[in-house]
Amino acid sequence: MRPLLTACSVEVYKLRRSYVLWGTLLFILFVITLSLGQPNWPSFFERTAFLYASVFGLLGFGLVTSWTFGREYSDRTLKDLLVLPVSRGKIAIAKYVAIIFWCFVMMLISLVYALILGFALRLPGFSFAIVQHYLFLILTIGALHLLLSAPLALLACISRGYLVPIGFAFTTLMLALVFGPTAIGAYLPWSVPALHLQESGVSLFPLLATSYLLVFLIGLLGLIGTVTWLQNREQ
Image (cartoon, rainbow, N blue to C red; front, side):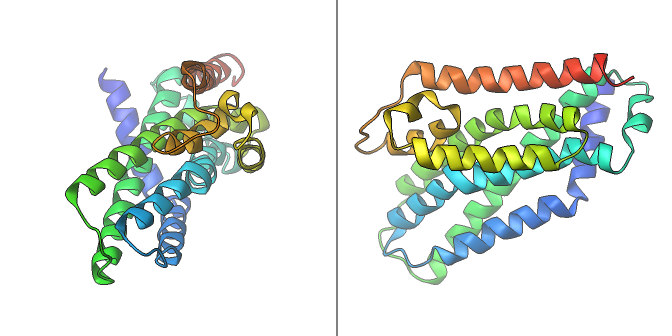
């Protein structure tokens, strides 16, 4: 257990020093700032939640995941990493833990930033119930996107870099935008976070239990595939 905790702390520290992480956060804060034209708190939070259900989740979290795994190949540090006295499976899990930790940190920072902006502009309609509702909603959407980001790590390992998984993340965003509003969206895993956001209102194509199961399976297969690839292919 101790080697895993040590590997997690190292990966958390490495990602903290990455310009990709902080660049992604700055992009998120910048886009939230552009959403200040909303008339009240519910509309402002709804807009922020939609951004997390689409661009922030698929591209933002996807970029962080792709970089975390792909940079080991581009910087040619993977061989040095694999000779450490830690199993390759634990290294993969540690990287996933670091990604999850910092993505949730980014979500919390961006929500605090949104609150500061809203109070500075004196948006009407504030209540703690609204904050609690959208906090839970955005964190849930973020968890769904983290599951969907797991296969990007496998793509980074297979392609030995981060460009292919980033391209894949962009493709899934386009697919979600095109097919999300249709009946196919409930069966397209990358559309589920945005459709989950719409579940609080009137949805023409409501989600099924199968929709969430597909997201879970995508995440599980991504994790298992990454661990298996590092253990068997990277010699």
